[in-house]
Length: 551
Image (cartoon, rainbow, N blue to C red; front, side):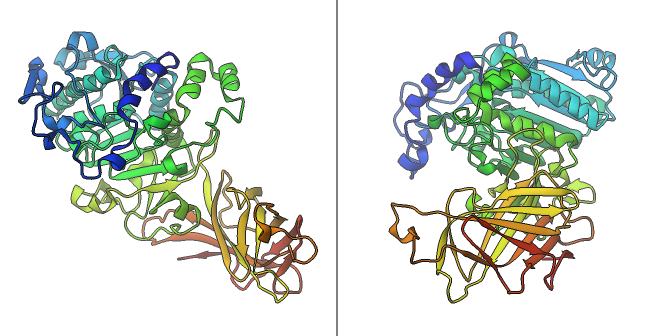
């Protein structure tokens, strides 16, 4: 997490080396330093190694360099400067942490219960364990289960410059791995019961630790930092081999040139991209009085985070919300966010076509067998895939997702297509949901075809839809003469029926679970004639209605 006063520091370090992405200028990967035959001043002539007492050694080889993605490398600061500390919280001491070290005396004097699962929390760049989000995550974890929660304090190494902070993460990873391996060796802790949660640079720190712990259960990367990691080999960054399960939430993947701090490339077994993983709803400070309201409600620290890195921090908030919510963050595997929004990837078939984002990712159907995460060999099919979903702009962020299909009729007097805005009001016993079916703006609708879109809402209709009202407004664009509809054209929209589908994850013994409600025109005709700025009413009167269906 980047503090308000250090934005210019970060930009100055990276913008000069990131004017264009490696994908555009380096399609043949010639900028990789191990492709360069000559020795350059900042590259090591040979393998350079430094050792850190009982922790082991670190080296810097040519594979750690890339002229665009990672032009500079240094060794970490001394251990005494970084001063990595492990602060333990349990239900016996939920607010007063205990300092633990990799020695018997420290561990046995603490409340660490080796029979219970262990969660590590690692903060990122220009951040500390005193941040509000660390406390919030710790409290939610302890609320959910009787756990050992260990907060990793590496504030002595997380300050600028960023180049040095990235190097320090390698040493912090050694410290974490040493503690975990000590618990495994001396207290018979099962490495599969250990889960490391890291934000930004902390995500890659978790990867460094996991690569040194055989059989580590899980790593959750919360918007892993992009600069110096994106496009680099797997041993430089978080990757799927670092734990039995690596799940990643991407929320700020615009690229550092556009002040996006998070990675966009997949780097786990399950990579989630809420709202396309770039711009999060509610984070556009130019459109809302977001910062002043946050300042009044949550204080200066949170307001500075919103101003500087709202999208980057959203991954943390989504994860915290997912811990104890009753709303599942269901994500769908799809080739693109546009295809997902068009409803092309809405069913949960066998395997991992759908996954649960956040704390409960390890309970994803198709991912678990005999209460254990599938081995790496069976998880290979999901690596590199992207899982999409939409969320709300405010807490609680979790929304239910609905696929709305509007089947358009084509009577002889209808135009072949019309352009405009379409909104829906959906009625159920749980209340009324108002949805914008054309959120991207005026949309071209072709009569005789079916217009499909995926929308989200916090309410759960559980498949019980009683009525749908469609509101239609024709839009004329003076720059497109064909849309001008004055005296000689028909601006009505003709709708045959409306299909509302809600996806639920399948339970044990079920293949797919989907609520489907088809509603037809209330009038005598087979279609509704909706005038410009008018509405059409559709009720539960079709042959297929309000039933629990398999797709």
